[in-house]
Length: 595
Image (cartoon, rainbow, N blue to C red):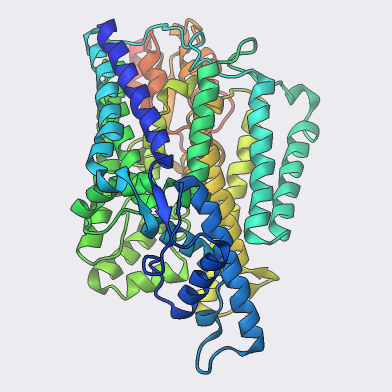
């Protein structure tokens, strides 16, 4: 069995090396007839700039060509600005003639795609097999032999494995601080707006001040680090790779053109269109959830709740998040993920989305109404009965990825009181930001005015999309799995999790009950809690766990050797459930039995 697993690891590493290497395979050659630009003024200016730069009809490496194409587009934009200042042609609108920064970004991707040629473009299925195919086969060869092992959680050395034991505090901070500062600085350079980066930095400093200095000194417990002595070097490599992938995906998509070209045949089979970077991401996401979901089944197969929950996230990711939206596009309907909910789906109320849905016939109207009802009625109603687990652990794609690909890193979540304070400030701050942004965009939609109380809706939504929609949820939220655990985004940033959590804590029947008399303080529950909850401390006191952050994954109950923890729904104590001490429920029948 070990030999089979080693072969699987080898195939997976080989597929990852090929996947990375193909970014530089082939060449790009700009010609006057292959730019893919329909605007005559823009195309003429680009051809002139390319000719002057000496790159017209010249083959370049795919990675080097991106910088070259951007330089050409900037020169073309400057030339058009000069001509516009002297007087553009009669009857031509300004932005039909000039080339804005958003057009430069769009044209970069278009030109890179249209001018690319090489082995990947000629043999996409071959490279698809060498990457996705080998990765799937390798993963299954490593995972499937685990079904022959005895069921149940074992003390399997997770804190001794160089991939899963975590990072020392100084190494962790070497990732986190540059990520925060770098994202803010890059946001300023990208959006050319200093106000919102400064506001973000100010809020980060304010939260740190409140956490460290405004509370009683006895509450300032130090962070608990998963590995205070040694740093897992494989975890560092995995973290760097994931962070790099998300940076390219969100902010430099022209560099991953070969990846997109490789999966285009798959996209054409499903939706009839060429692939985009988001199709690539959706396909990768789905494959990872399915393969790593099988791993989840091997690990937690002794627990029926975990098996059904894993099947659920695999189904919703494959059907609702990936296949159904692509099939809708093939049927000339709007791309729509029926399980995505505002405020996680933060652009749902953007003007372009409302217009697209409202003008797409009966199905589009249904999608719009469905999204509104699900947000206003569905979320609080279902959460009242089942807690936030119905979404965060059974339906959500972010939660699905965290529970499958992120499961090996779940023990890295910080359980300290200080981390919990950061969590409360940040996640509810993101929810507030989402509410403010949505208010502004709806105000703009209904009135046509972009400014309200000194806030510009376009600037706010651009910064929110950059910082929260890309930087937090992607680069940090997933890239930091091997560094801070698998639920960084769900715990600290997801505005929908904050919304669900508020309902769960105060108006939900869900709780985790404990039988403190049987607790042996083994600590498995706290170790495996991905949301940073010190479950053992509740169990030792016999106190019900009612935390807004709890996603009801049930892993704490699955790994408890004594059956101390139970996921339950009950309405008896909804009004007093947040009391410090557990409320013991004893019925009249039980009193008679005891007497």
